[in-house]
Amino acid sequence: MIVHDVSVPIFMGMHVFAGDPAPEIKRVKSIEENGANVSVISMGTHTGTHVDPPFHFVQSGNTVDELDLSLLMGEAKVFEVYGTLKIQPEHLKNLDIQKGDMVLFKTDNAKRWKQPQFQKEFTSLGLEGAQYLVEKGVKAVGIDYLSIEEYHGGGRVHRLLLGNGVVVVEGLYLNDVNPGKYKFICLPLKIKGGDGSPARAILIEE
Image 1 (cartoon, helix red, strand yellow):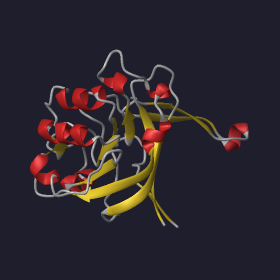
Image 2 (image 1 turned 90 degrees about the vertical axis):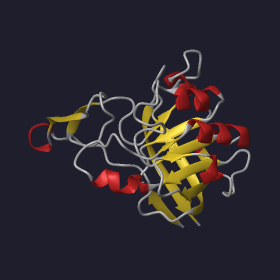
Image 3 (image 1 turned 180 degrees about the horizontal axis):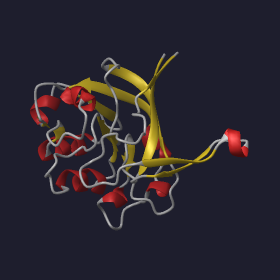
């Protein structure tokens, strides 16, 4: 069994979506002075690798603590989609996408994580592409940068997916993972009433 950690590390100075709070990490106790190391962390709920529940864009939708975790566990399919800034049906129609799938997109975003700061131009899922996935009946979709939707998307892709019960995982790090089928586990923090949560995401290759 090979375990691939496909989450990004959380640290001060990391990429955050424009306008979101950057993480701050401060050591408040140390082994030398207190016998143990303890830190305080301040960060947005959509920092790094994170889960978007319906409540992120749908006022009546489930919050992150209300999510059915089975939507974020099980077989996932990693697909490579290169050479486009917007994933649309023409990029999806020849892929093996079935009802109940968890679909993870590995794109040109791989190189964007290597830049010194957040990149406003990144590969995202187009509205028609999102509709295609909804009609296919996928249960979750993930992408390898900080938003499933283009920078000035207006929330339409999020509302379409989340409003139809498709959980969204953003900020995956798929650079070192080959396309194919894996066991996927992505567990968000149980934040009561949360509109999102950082998560540790892994792919298991058996």
